[in-house]
Image (tube, rainbow over all chains, first blue to last red; front, top):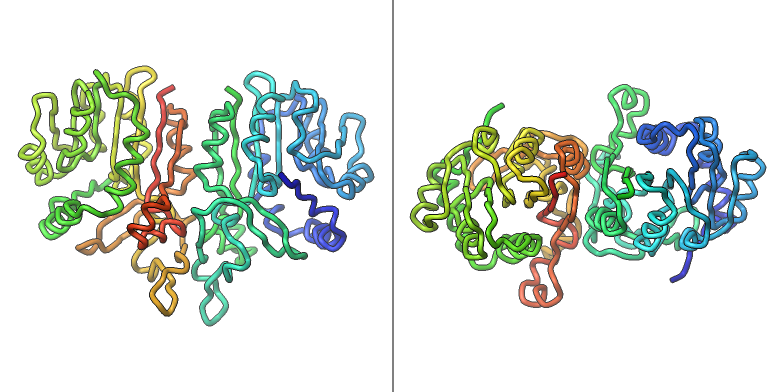
Length: 248
Length: 248
């Protein structure tokens, strides 16, 4: 199975950095707060962060009281930024594909992953490894692109139908039932996403030894909509799916 | 909370009867086989069927070995048909809204519901009662219209975008994130459906004391598509969601 390392592509990397630095984006407004709300008290926990990127979350978890964080990322470029910007004696960065975590030492209380698992073909395999790396009763909390997003391939046509004023009136949902690789354009061509239906995500977790504790499909609050009305489109199509699961 | 009894509407009732009598329909091709696949061995079980309608499933469960089936339906008309067509000393039919099952005697091994829960506003309340009526380790297996279907209201416009040959190219997904009542037209005006996001269905089950064991979003097999090519549209938009959950 090919392991994608799009973050080491220079054009992708530069554009991605700029995106994440913008103050107002869907990550900052929805993904981060909803993920933090799912978190238990991190005091004294050993945490594994899968797809840690520039390590901002690793630092955040240490600030929130975690005893130790191991950040794993496939991209050496991202980890260079991480070591520069988010260095801490209690954070260890490992450069490896998420598919290879079977080789690292276990004993984690919590495994977290933010918007990385939709880049992974072998989700089942990652789930199995995460289960093995967790202590009894340990938690797996992750976010991914929502299944009604990952189903889209740019070659299918536009994701939206808009009215004459450019207002999005509905999302164009196609091929949701056809799982597998999608080639999308995001700064560069051929960024690969792996689409899984909602049921597959949940069933793979159950089969991998997890109990589902909470699902979140984030939506804008009324206050947020007043400030950023462009996010009304999340009512038509959620961007993210967040999952909190417990090792059983 | 108003409890809808659309099945006692005469026009609705007659059309619904005709639909269910057609040999080839989505219920017979997808919902029924997938629901039966989720079933445990029924031998000796006490089963409660919520929204049993004409009782065909109640009879089927007895044939499959169930010791006793209680069928609940809000529609006296449907239960008249059930008593005529699916009478059995081991089946009891009760005419009541599903929201009122809190009053019946418990001790069930399995609670089943086929395509009825999307008519119910108070899903949380039903889940709570189902949990109470089940024996330890008992199962709740149900199907409902898929969340990408229940979100639609006919006043939002067409559910599909078609090409010049009438082929469905995508489903028009709108207002998925806005839960609650929908007024749809199905034989008669104002058939009320209650839309819940995927996450809400699962979270309400978890909060109500269930562990999710399996989810199914049925799709046509290649053989089935050859025979009934019109069902390719399920790849764009699944019609059904099936859930198997265990009382914990």
